Amino acid sequence: MQYTQNISECFGAGRLGKPDHAAMLAKTASVLARLRAQHADGSLALLRLPEARDDLAACEGLAAHLMKDTSDLVLLGTGGSSLGAQALAQIVDKFRPIAAPRAGSPRFHFPDNLDPFAMEAILNGPDLRTTRFLVISKSGNTAETMSQALTAVGKIEAAGGGKYLKQHFGVITEPGGRALRRLAERYDIPVVDHPAKVGGRYSVLSSTGMAPAICLGLDPVALREGAAEVLAPILAGAKPEEIPAAEGAAVSIACQQRLRAGIQVFMPYGDRLERFVMWHRQLWAESLGKGGKGTTPMAALGPVDQHSQLQLYLDGPRDKLFTVLTQELAGRGPRMHSEDPELAYLDGRTIGDLAAAEQRATIATLVANGLPTRTLHVPHLDERALGALFMHFMLETIIAAELLAVDPFDQPAVEAGKILAREYLENMKT
Image (cartoon, rainbow, N blue to C red; front, top):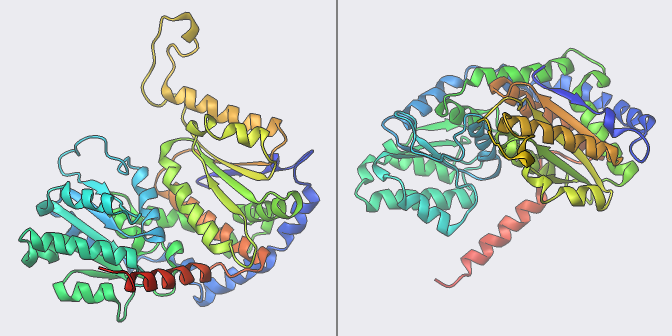
């Protein structure tokens, strides 16, 4: 397995009782059986993505188109159409470029939040002649993404590049009469299909994630192989206690129902999992928050949030379940040297040594304070490991939804807000 999960510190005085967890875990057996059946008959398309290969040629073709003579690649999308790609970019240190790229390696930009000032900076900063745009929208009608795409098209046309628009853009969207697909057809822009039966926030293993992964120089097959490893025990009929995603879902919902732990803190150590946690935050919140049910995901980051959140975690309301994602950090990064006696504990150590000590200390402190704490350890963060984590938490979310008796695939409250925003815009004075 690409990671190890430890839930043992969720039990004990003031924490969860093992019988409560066992009872909740037993309830997952029915959903695991249904997942096996849905994989067998293909009715839950997400479960077939780890084994899929026939869509990768189209993703590779789109990536080759976008990466030709390119200095900057801008991914236009929001939510599930962008967060997975951002998580992928972080494992190759291309989420926040801090210097000019190496020869042949473009800068990557992810303006996933609709902000007028950020969009102006994106369109006025890079050299538009060598800037490419990958536009991703499952529905093909997402207002935020379409507004970004339209302004990008307009900017290139205004700069005299209208006849070259095809070279600047690539599109991923569902088949059918979509606004984004019509835009692509107008300018003969290459389009790769988004699978119609895979929801946006569950789409990272589809073309939505695979095309950006290829642009980033990652191996899409390895990503899917990592996901397949996590899915395999379910398909093989393993018991719930042998399936980490089932154990995690049972811990989460049991802590909420027995301990009133309505907040789940996800805290990775190291920047390379920061966007992954943001991806998970959307997945969990949008899938489970319905009908007065669900738990609130809180994203944190170690070590920095030891200085901004840990006081609250340890001495504030006891309404939280903690999930700490750890990596092998010791010995990594630049080495420190100091002759100051007060800094002798740092002399000869690496940045990774200190970060490793702090992630260990935070877990020990949470446990010592009687707070339910789950850990997921990732020995080597690469494509297989990230693919495994993606699949683990998609499965955990689906299983948790079954325990809460909610539909993990819709988002009715979000749709109501979209309709109202459109009404406001239509009535706005120009």
